[in-house]
Image 1 (spheres, rainbow, N blue to C red):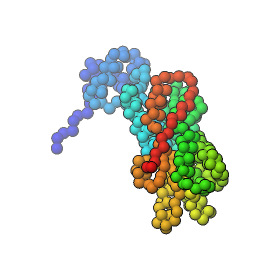
Image 2: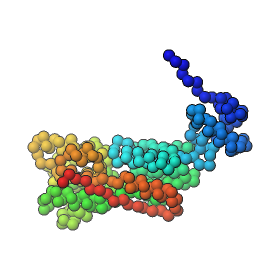
Image 3: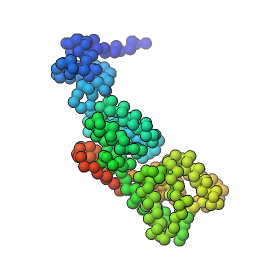
Image 4: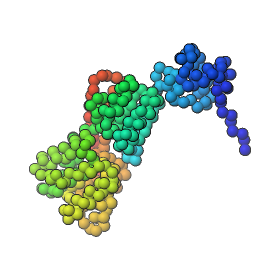
Length: 334
């Protein structure tokens, strides 16, 4: 077996740079200014380290420069096409702009969000994007104290600019489309999924109610079920509704593809039993679901446009706090 290539050491770098090992160590650890080492020599050491495959600590690199070249993002989850598309698009935009991106999942846990923000501040990020954060204003305050700007994506905050979908109009258009497909004068309509406490769910419920009101349909409070986004919670809430109403609704508005995963097994049971199934709509989009589920209408959020606007705000660096809403796209097979 051939010998493994020898790893470059601090002593190797010192010899290549024509300086001492202690000087190289100070540069790598970000202490070169305190040691009164010249910027030219520090730059030379860092260039040699990269050239020879020396594993530079990103925090050390940040400390050795005026700016770190790192920007961060927190997302609530990866196992959802919408959020995974946001993470992937963010990384592509960051690299195109010459930044190193860091993305981490915080599972809609406010304490994890704050811990992630603190960790990213340790890397001296130049920007932190809060995607679907439960309390973006708390994260803003933490970052502002360190002089780091924040931007909000998907869910808005009040202390930094936000880029979100047109939740109200998207839900309004989706419900109108479902009513047309349903074809009944007074359908039983149910909204399921999401959190009553978050802006997006409230706006989607408002759009749902507005469309039903336009058709002179009264919606009962028991038909609005913001049970959370988790699939198991949505499935359980739907089963309980069916049991208490001895059947299925005519129209079902599902507030994310995550919730839809919990609803679909219940729909399949109804089909297997030869029972009627509801006209199905989902405020979220997945290409597989859109092409394989009969008569489903889905709302696709324009991730590409949202990220373009987000990076435009980053470049602009304005003190003005904006909330920019991006139009959604209605997807159906008819």
